[in-house]
Length: 241
Image (cartoon, rainbow, N blue to C red; front, side, top):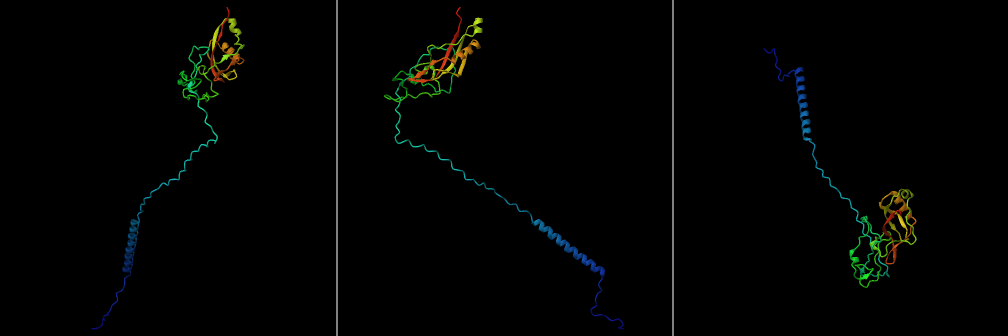
């Protein structure tokens, strides 16, 4: 009757196949959790955008230089007396050109008020009545026109004109040269200013240039002072027949 004994706490025998399956299942769960956790970290770690404002720093600009103060006048300086109030005198040119002369815009413009005929002869319109100061003169290196001087340029006594070219004389050719040049304060022609405004033949022009180099003139004068003058003078070449 009691051939078979019953064990009160019977131990179940563990199967090898069930243990391996359980280990694999747990490992799969662990791996899945690791992957999910890693992906969640990557999603949350998004790069943060930061706004950067660049501020331009102005450099210190150098201060503008202060204007130089004019030197003080000497203690004993005396103002020059003003020129007299009056007028200038026009002189008719010795030779009237038949063409319009060239205009030099670099020269000082003539003030028509200086030729009103009122006041003291030799003065200027902007002068002062009773003034005894010098009349402002044109720059020394700038020539005057014939109507601006009191005594225009004239050929010196005994001065010889140009020689007639032999070739043109033999051919019976006549002509004229209208020359323009500046006579300086010594009475010599400044050949650097020579121009042939009109010429009937180049040989006539050459003869005039050669003659001007040795010719002498009486220089122009303004207020008793010798000045340069622009001269326009014709030279006639004619044969006595």
